Image 1 (tube, helix red, strand yellow):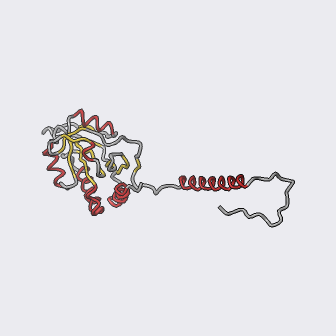
Image 2 (cartoon, rainbow, N blue to C red; image 1 turned 60 degrees about the vertical axis):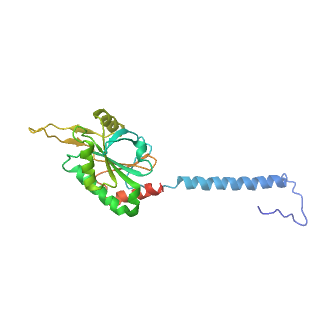
Image 3 (tube, helix red, strand yellow; image 1 turned 180 degrees about the horizontal axis):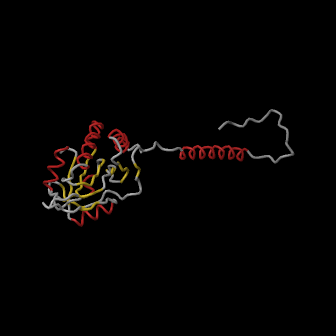
Length: 222
């Protein structure tokens, strides 16, 4: 605060009330406080860097479930905390969308470089009748056994989890040989290292786009 220096020959001002030095100090301090508050408010109103993917922060629940891993052991959402999780609902007999999505996620991991070690792909089956733990292990292992893990469960567990994250799927009519396909949603859910739902990637999002936003989630620069 600048000192208040009196003039050598002060003249009384009868037209206005005199303010004490403490009052003047209070006024200056108050003004500084107001300016600081306005600056902080201006900073708060600045827009954050936009996401390339769909931002679902606060709109979907945390990563919570009880399922069976592709090693046959029980797992839950807490088992995957500490890494960014890419969750995809599919099935091993899927003829096109599932392998295409997994292939795209492999490209994403390649683009992340060393940061790929901080990412886990969770392939959750919507066809538990056929997708045993071993079948899932063989399937995800063909793509990336280091970063991908298959998860299955009872029909009720899968239905409950799909409903939790608004995933739609439906068994189609069986052919004469008993084979069938499962129509299902194809989005990839991105959860941060604490298990919070953050982003949603669709078929229209490129590996570059997904990798760009994943780096922000991994670095927690959101």
